[in-house]
Image 1 (tube, helix red, strand yellow):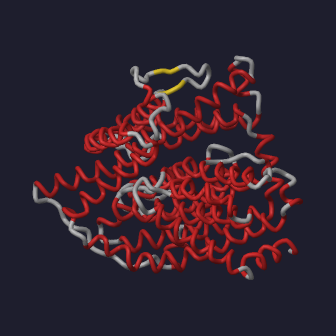
Image 2 (tube, rainbow, N blue to C red):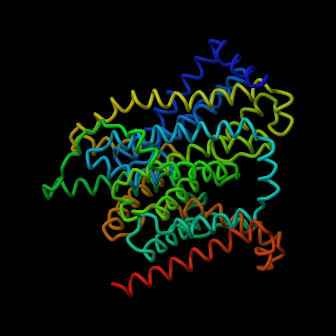
Image 3 (cartoon, rainbow, N blue to C red):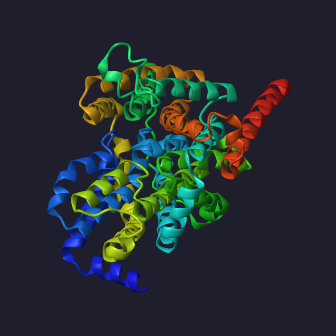
Amino acid sequence: MENLLTGIIGLFTDPMAMLFFFAALIGGLFFAALPGINMVTLGAIILPFTIYLEPTYAIMIYGVIYVSGTYGGAVMAILFNIPGSAENAPTAFDGYPLTQQGKSGLAIGAAIVSSSLGGIFSTLVMMLAAPIVGRWAIHAFGPPEMFALIFFGLNVAASVGADTFWKGWLSVLAGLLLACVGTDPAGGLPRFNFGTYYLLAGIHFIPLILGFFAISEVFVQAEKMVTFKYKAPRVGLKFPSFKDFWGMKICIVRSWILGFFAGVLPGIGATLAAFLSYNEAKRWSKHPERFGKGELEGVVASESANNAATGGAMIPLLALGLPGGAITAMMISVFMIHGMEPGPLIMVRAPELVWVLFVAMFVANVLIFILGYIETKTIVNLLKIPFRILCPIIFILSTIGSYALRNTLMDVWVMILAGVAGYFLRRSGYSVAGIILGVILGKLGESAFVKAIIIIEYNWVGFFTRPVCAVLMVGGILTLVWNIYSSFKIRAVA
């Protein structure tokens, strides 16, 4: 209790702390809403300047950016089918169809509430259990468990966004193939780079997201305009009611738990949490056929999980010094810039810093309610802009976002090619989300597999002799078998 009061006093009685808090909150919301120019870009821009700030201010800024940026990416996903980051991709599956139905306010309102509640839940758990959960995660999850979790996640989420199970898996396998481009994690040797050094670092998922979602959407809407089938979406400002959320209470709690524990695992984080949560919501729904067509529960599941992961990601960072993603990796850089080392002793040596961070993240999640409501009342009016004007704006912003990532035209070409491919894949019933998931988890999974196979001495049975690993592997295999059986059963009935 004393530490909590220290954090509250440290934040609310310091004018400079409040100034940096609100700057980070608004900056995270704004940057996350720009295609390709997300919270990671903002974090990279301000990193060199943190050397001039007090450590408490610098760490707090990144914690608040992480919270607000994770929510902010949902806005463009819902309004224009342009996810601000990978963890917001499942939000677009139902959020954008709701916008097309004139229910943009309903979708954004659901994202606001579920994001805020998910973040508040994870922050409270973070305050209570950071050292305990952090040590458990590291002892229970080694490379074999990481690989098993990714294997399970791919099997669970393979059919998301596809017309059939087989098209879903083909999409995921295409993503896994793209993940092989670059450098072999085992020997460090180049592969599939086609003789160009631009591909040695691999194909980044940000240009792919912008291409598959933003650019392909431009092509789809442009086709409708040419054929006179385009109809501008109505501006909807109706927010979801308490009854709506109460009807999804089980989904919300399930998404909190999935998101938090996915955030605790280094390198897994919010992306897998969002996809898993979305798929589980669809699996347990009484109306799974509504998902992908404007089901509010899909938005709630995705946004509850990815924001619940923000608090979880702080636990391995502060308790063990292990980053869970790009923003938390930057936070480790800030610690090092100021001559500090995150780990178990940070709670003892700098309790004020830690608790100011906790309180700031909690307050940021609460303020998403207010700022999100104000933002919704204004930003949905973007839908009133004619698409012939929005089209070049989206294309230009996406191009800037792709180029700014690594300052290379190769990423721009990847975005354009992904846009063309995405246009045809969407028409054919394949899952662009599955490809994105394959690219992101493919690199993590291969790296974990290389380490795991060495640990278990190249004996495949070793994956089933470790309890947590065995449960995940068996769960993944059973999910795969059940999906194959269901697909054949559906075909037989048809």
